[in-house]
Amino acid sequence: MHAPHPDAAELEILADLLSGGRICLLTGAGMSTESGIPDYRGPDGARRVQPMTYQEFTAGSDSRRRYWSRAHVGWQRFAASAPNAGHRVVAALQRHGFADSVITQNVDGLHQAAGAREVIELHGTLSLVRCLTCEDRTPREVVEQRLAHLNPGFAARVRTGEIRPDGDVTLAEDDVAEFVLATCRVCGADTLKPDVVYFGENVPKDRVARAYEAVDASRALLVLGSSLSVMSGYRFVRHSRKAGRPIGIITRGRTRGDAEATHRIDAGLGESLVALAGLLGLDEDFGPVVDGEYATGLPLGLT
Image (cartoon, rainbow, N blue to C red; front, side, top):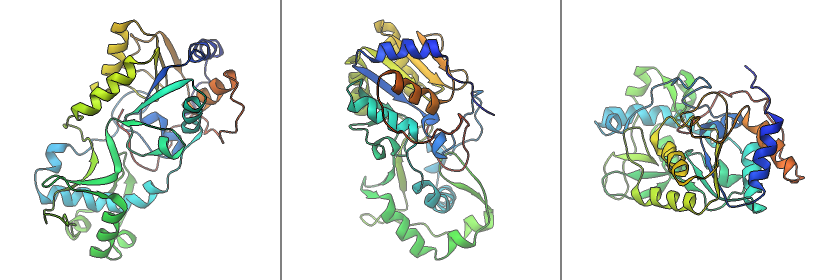
């Protein structure tokens, strides 16, 4: 289904708002769908899959085996994802002084890959793995190499189903059962977990405080590609509304923050951001725009 084209009058209003600088950007999973990374919710706001919760992950080795077997198979496709035009516009807005801060609910690192700086990763990053027992952190690529050594040929021989939003794939239970978990090289526990905030887990307080500081330092908040269905992002909309700041939202479908928004565009994000960049005089090649469609094929962002 194709997204509606952005409303020209609303784009002009947002361009005028951005022209004054000091804008805080809050981004969600819709930011990365045009890079082939599906989100948990479509434009209708309904959750399409049920993610593994923190409580499930910590329940025992069998739960972690289910996660890591599926995530190991999906990792290569996730790691191959690249920034899209929307990510490049966000980086350009920072570079040219229109936006100061970027708070993202995504864990894919694509904002940084596009050139954005000092990004506050509200929900962490899939590029690191944390041991829940001793708190050691290891690059994801190192853990993936160890998993490949422990499970030679596993990714190539198993029968895979659809890619899911959290970066894993569906696998047959027999395949999951034979998967060998990697253990922490510091303490030996099998409690390795991607360094991301799972459903049922709290965002670290210091990270939330940094995000509030970024919002309070801004003139306005612009939400990009988020349904604001979870409080971890929606709280910044509520906070901005109480402070009397303008709030813009660009995303497909309804959002939890529509009543608080002073400016609202229901359209494809890439097309909207490229058009907005043009109105601000950013004469750059941001690359092709996927025609507003929600892509399917890779992992995550929490909306």
